[in-house]
Image 1 (cartoon, rainbow, N blue to C red):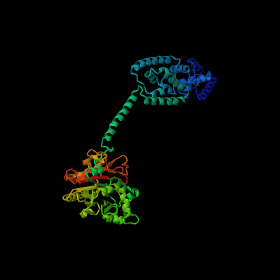
Image 2: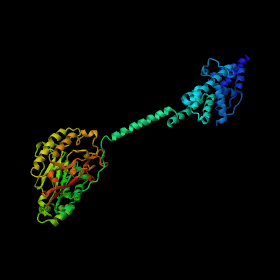
Image 3: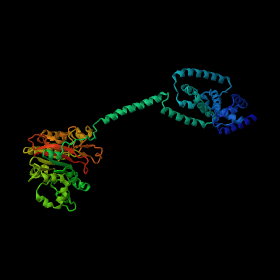
Image 4: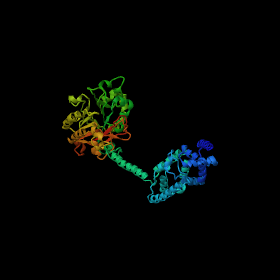
Length: 579
């Protein structure tokens, strides 16, 4: 009875002391454990109820019978002693987790035989594992099996001196309390992350790095392929001016007839944003004719007292006579206009009075040249009559096309000049058939009829980018379905040029790249120069030939991309009129 009550007391005391966690300590020898076992076997078998690790039993009995000093710094001596105790006690198999069966003592013969067998197995596994250098996964180390710990030690023989105390401390921590294994897991997780981030000896890391490099290498050519999918030309090549009007006047006595074309994309908004743009442009290039497309006005708008459009042009371009073509089928749509410089005629000057004198200041150079060189009705040796139109028509004479106000044609003594705004095929290409099969064909026939009498120049927004030099992204897949770059529109333009007409800019500047006249404002393409060349001067071949018998020769054509005010920019044509 006395022994039974004593045993019960010991068991209760042991269970209460199990709450205390001994982190690192020098454990008692197996003799102390055996003496305790001899005094009460029932106490020994009661321990697995609290914990399933023999090392934990040793530490707890030590707290019961021999107080121990706790060292939080984990010195190397304590760690080495703990490792010795831990390796000696690790001989018990995983079957100790079964709480229903008693376990053999450390000092028994079965245990010693088992430890010797395990030792021999360790030596054999070390010999086999050394040349292979295969590191077992660290998950097995956490479980505490003998084979995993041995393999892990063999896999990294160089790091034994530094890494072994840490590993043994981790094992000893398992013997101290049940709360320690999670801490060892926390230590193990960063090690795994380090091994993945750094190229260690493990084959898994090598394979992962090779996979990532393969992905990068495989993705890079794809990006290059996309970049090479179509041209991306945004650089504007420098352009050399081919003609100097002042030199031609002084050396040859010839006159340079200058024509400017500009799609203003709505004249009312244009005047508000750039009220002086046209006047400055006329002064800068000493223009004789200014052609506008897409003014979007009706005839009532010119004399509207609120808009005051006619007054605006009388003030800014009073030295020019204006001719307008309006869209009658659709309001606020299309429309063309031509401003022709007034010559001689005192009646015109008297009508404008002071305004005429004010506007005349914009064109002082030509006026002075004309006053000095004028003898009768001539500028130098060029008759003024050659600079004045004989007739101006605001229609083609074709009823199915004239309702949209797309042309203004002026007949000069030496050539015909036609300002045209070619129909756009639309975002959904719903007018592609009309544009290529009807408009282009009928317009070409009209120009050929005019050419029978004298050379022809037609100019304006032709709504087509002819070839790869006229687009910044030639080869892009969407171009074949976009208005202005469809194969049908380009083929139709080829037919027009093949009928005996010449693109003046491309003829004079064959290798020019990056010279565009239109940029999408929605996409903000003007600053990076992602544009199209949609505005042209198309001339009869006779005007491009410089013979002694030719009285009129096209000398230069260029684009003015720095002039703001619209999503298009102005283009300029210089024509020499010989004496």
